[in-house]
Image (cartoon, rainbow, N blue to C red; front, side, top):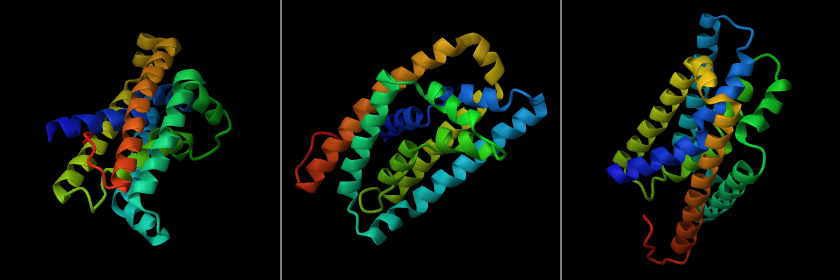
Length: 209
């Protein structure tokens, strides 16, 4: 159980990428005082939490209403996660990509681009649905997954609160290096999701959890 929760924590840390969110937050909070910056961080994380929890509760129902099997969603999602991870490793890192989005953002900056797509990223939404499937995961396991999501969001909130000192410590180069390492980890996890989805579709018994 502990190993599973640890793997989930690594997965959600990779897809949410709290450190990669720091540069986006710093740009949005550059003209704010300390109190307003803390408020912006809290609003962004709270909204992202609401979106992720909605997908935890209703994501599977949406799939079933559309007639999409979890295996198909898992394989398709794994492919998308893999492509996303390649962009993190070989293309522009998450900070570079989303700083461009931030330049075009108007009011409601706590929602866009901070809460979405930076914190509640497509990969995070996908992972939330896959790991809370009612047919494969008991309620206790789903509660554990939800707590893992909240733990990563809490870590994100803490990092945003200390964003300015963290920027001085890591620098732009540091955040980009960490983002690329997260991309490599995410590629491995995406490949595992694809293999598990294929194995379950053909009723095989994979060695993977």
